Image (tube, rainbow, N blue to C red; front, side):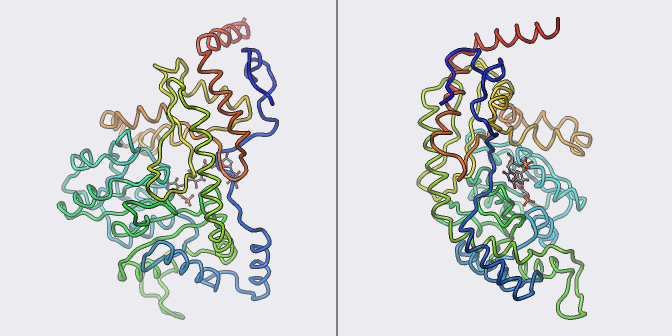
Length: 407
Ligand code: T4K
């Protein structure tokens, strides 16, 4: 086992990396390979590859049953699902969203010339702060899109109340939240609609894929039309639409991975607890805690690095970890408001987003998933612990090293 006992053992200082091969935050969760290959062969024998074939239909039904919703419309990815759901709902003008999210949430609005109005988050949940949402409402606001970040539910009650009182539409980007619950009810049935991602790196993957879940019959019918060019039957286009269909091989992967959910959760939860043990008592590094009384998928292991307490900045820690082949990620740095085109459109947005700015500087996603063992996690935690416990010496040594390089 490659453990660090002296500064020179750190790969950044010339030592052996903790891992020979890189370890990733988002290795795909892959269910029973034989089951998938059997389905792939069935699909090829059937010669039916897309346009809502039997696997996609079955996948939609299984997902709807699992979530306890009336409709699940499977799509080619979550970004297109968001775009279609937003358009079908009739959102326009301004829509309130967090800036602390993957940029797709904002792009899905801006793509159709709806202005994403960035609202600050609650630093405890990393989700929209309802009090601040209320302050962002203008006469142009038509909706709110909450993001259940890391699979941790938004303040659904408070947001529903605000939407109701202000006559706004409420939707959720549930890209991270498949298999998670809020107050015992599965995420998928809240607001007007909820959108899931089944991207390769997500808890449940269909290679690429997504879905809209809703209990609204009229909205579901509209979304179905829109995702298939507006076709209501052969040669009969009754609506503007796009191509948002899920392919059969994606449906086959989805069905296979649905059969494996229990094992995936157990593995993610075991990893999360291993990190909790490995990082416990460490000053300035706190693990984002999930509510274990709810159902969760534990797909993301998130820590916050508080430089004032740890003596090491998050970015310095990332450099050190990457040198060790531990590919931790700064999700979702630097925040949508600091990305184009939003940075140019709203150069001062950050003034209203103090918590987002602070959390963006602190958050780090650590490697987890079915390819990471408890021993790997012990090793990752060992590196982090060594760096934090020797913060001053590590900083001084690396500063000297940099100075030597300059001269
Ligand atoms: N809303 C939210 C809140 C989201 O997080 C996302 C997507 C969306 C909406 C939109 O959903 P989709 O339209 O994608 O369905 C990744 C994903 O590309 C993105 O889907 C995801 N969020 C985001 C959180 O993560 P990157 O830029 O981090 O991807 P990448 O290629 O750097 O991969 C991440 C890690 O996973 C790497 O360490 C490598 C590893 N990996 C990746 C792939 C694709 C593998 O080991 N195997 C793989 O096949 O965005």
